[in-house]
Amino acid sequence: MRTYTPKGREAEALEQGEKWYVIDAEGQVLGRLASRVARVLIGKDKPAFSPHLDCGDHVVVINAAKIRLTGNKVAQKVYRHHSGYPGGLKEVPLGRLLPQRADWVVREAILGMLPKNKLRAHRARKLRVYPDAAGLARHAGQKPQPLAF
Image 1: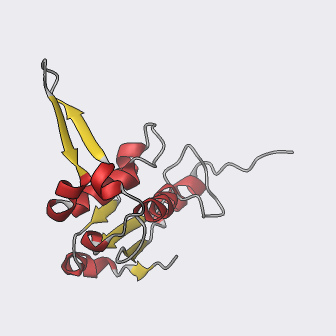
Image 2: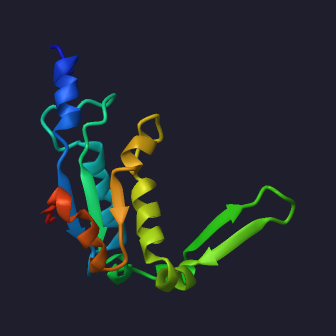
């Protein structure tokens, strides 16, 4: 049995037919929201999905500051990065980061669920995350449709 793969003009039509969606993160669990948004960015739910093409849609996430976390993640989860110098390990607990940069926390969770390949950066550019609902006004021209889960 052959597998359908869009080629040529069909592939171009897929990339041009991108839609804009808005997702309200208020009261939603971070991991579940991130996996659903990543699926839309990849385009997995489209009938003509192809893994080597970027056929995903644009996503605007609002109210990231009102995200819900389960368990004891606020106290235990730690974000780490290293400067490259000896002793350059920086650790920031989620409890301190969430009030200041909730949009960054949600963005990192979503980008962590995208496949690590050459299309990742292009898909990441299709994601916009705002800590409150005021960021939606920037994308009024794109007429984003609400996406409920």
